[in-house]
Structures are given as C-alpha cells and as structure tokens.
Length: 205
Ligand SMILES: Cc1cn([C@H]2C[C@H](O)[C@@H](COP(=O)(O)OP(=O)(O)OP(=O)(O)O)O2)c(=O)[nH]c1=O
Image (spheres, rainbow, N blue to C red):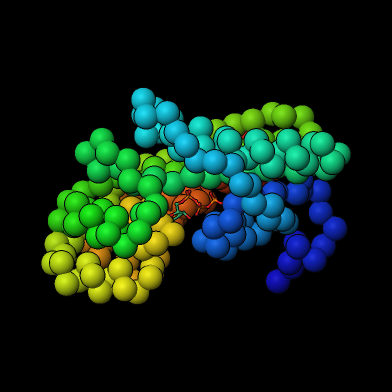
C-alpha cells in the first residue's frame, strides 16, 4: 500500500497545537503530514459563555497562539487547536484539580446522562484564515458506588481528563452508551475535522 507520508505531497502541513497524547494519536488517522507544537495558552473562560462558546473560544485561543508564533518565524501550516469539556445540567466540568474533585465529579456523573463538547479551530498560519466548529456527544454513565469510584480514581486515569474519566481506557467500563461521535469524547472529532479541512482544499478521504 502506498504511504503518502513517504511520497512527495502537495498537502499543506498540519500543525497540532496540543499536549494531549490522545489528540496526537488521533490526528494521524487522517494520514496527513503532522507536526506537534503545543500551545501553553491559559484556559480561563468567561463564566457567561455557553458550553459551545467555551470550547470554540479555547480551541481558537490554542490555535492562535501557535499560528502567531509560526507566522513570526515565517513558517506556514494549518494550525489545529481543540478543547473538550463535560457538561452536566448546565454545569461545566473540566479537568479535576485533585482526587477529591474527581470523586465529586464522578459521583455527580454516575447514573446520569451528560454531554461532551469538543471545539476544533483551524488557522492558516500564513494567511490567518480561520474556521471554528464544535461537536456534542451525549454519554450515559452507569450507576457507580463510592467504592467503584475510589478504585477508578486509584487507577490514575481521571486526573488529566475533562469530567474525570477516559472513555478510551478503563473508563469504558463506566459508560452504558453514547449518542454522537465517539472521537469527540476522546478529544478530537475526526469526521468534523475532515469536513473542516475541505474548506482548506484537503479531501480526506
Ligand atoms: C471525557 C474525556 C476527556 N478526555 C480528555 C481529552 C482532553 O485531552 C482532556 C480535556 O482537556 P483539554 O483542555 O481539552 O486538553 P488538554 O489540556 O489535554 O490538551 P491541550 O489543551 O494541550 O490540547 O480530556 C479523554 O481523553 N477521554 C474522555 O473520555
């Protein structure tokens, strides 16, 4: 099978502005040349923002800081930023601050349905042309008792994840079902990203 990454190509370089190992892994599914240049934007948000505005603004902020730095160095690329939050009845849950916070979040999420929002922003570093969208997935969590929650937290998995769980790991055992894009929950909705790349002339597949 031909591997486009080994061939001379006309695709613009994708630059993923993210420290997330999940996003770094997922973006390769599109079989495009990718560089990773994490942004260290602060994630303070306006409490009046709706969930979709929160993830779109944070995704834009992450992409923007890397796009600006590349432009200043005279380097191009389509810079991609993303942000994921969990929303339970109008309350936004980000990453837990500590284990007690994770316990509180998982106790609230168990036996309930919540929504996961991921915002995706693309900025052409040289032209500044930008595009931002979001996607929403509903997740039904199974009933969990305090012992199960404590054991899950002891696995260490919740600590760097919005809502204190990872559907792609041991957290899969906490989830009854989802409605919407699975990859959106993991932090990078691939089909949305593919749609957005079309605007920049990239057709995948
Ligand atoms: C709900 C859920 C979230 N997550 C992760 C995705 C994101 O990495 C993280 C939410 O934090 P984000 O602030 O969106 O991303 P990040 O800080 O990890 O990375 P960066 O800002 O550098 O791009 O939660 C999972 O991995 N699985 C899940 O099931």
